[in-house]
Image (cartoon, rainbow, N blue to C red; front, top):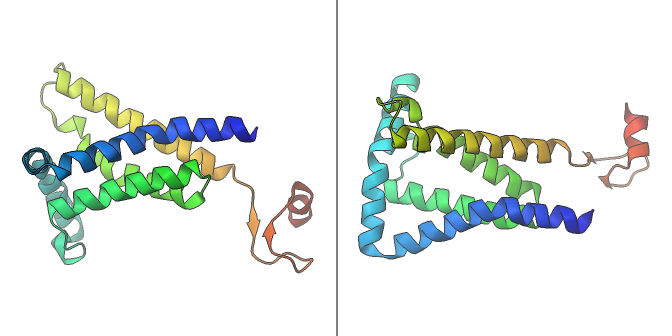
Length: 169
């Protein structure tokens, strides 16, 4: 099952890795990077305004990043998370979960598009639910990992076997 799991993780992470590489290539071109930043600026502004109205103070007091810095931070989280996930790292899965959790409602807010029959509405709705499904898959992957016990009864550390887990229950 090791090879099958590895291939599955590669296929799953490919979406994130390809997206991160594409964003890095786009940001390296001054004209394309400026266009990308201009296209996401309204969505980031709306998200900042929403958070400020909910928490009672401007979000930049907690996260003092420009739009470009947020885009780069998100892109690095996405790319590094994908590589670590392929390597079967729990940290990689958590990074992808964080990325998906933060980016999905900001970048794919289909409910804000007034024309429910437009192509833009349909695309954003599909992307939103695709990300929800990917978050669910990451959550499932994380939940099915072997239990790691910090200090076992026999004095060793590491992953508990199935027999050890039965003893603990």
